[in-house]
Length: 180
Image (cartoon, rainbow, N blue to C red; front, side):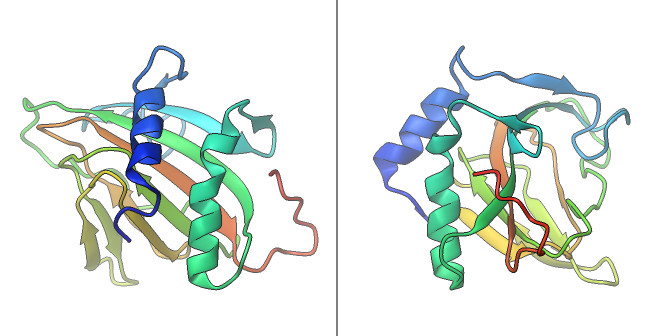
């Protein structure tokens, strides 16, 4: 979906994420903790999880709510929100793809919301690891897909790539506690 939220809200989020007020943390690898990426520099920030809730989480929740409504399951149970910032680097000439992964083994829906226009598409693959969807980041664009599908980011060469990753329960397990 393009322009999932109004342009003024897109710009507000973009301004906040690129300000001195937003906490970014260096990641050795954006996919797996402790790994060292040979593909580029990535920063991340936890916005909502089982053990953390950002004071500004309310800026991000409307995106998940709109997506939940579009998917037909109303107000979603959000169990994870993270921000990722891949720094452009035109010097790398080898494979710029991150490791294929799923965010969690629990049944869920992934929402990726792109903060800015950038190169470095998201790739979603089938069970044979064949690319079934390649999405180029565009400010305000949002993609939603079944969380059991393997996916990965690719590192940009021309423009920094900033994305918000949401994980939602489509049908919450009985033990699920909504964090927001």
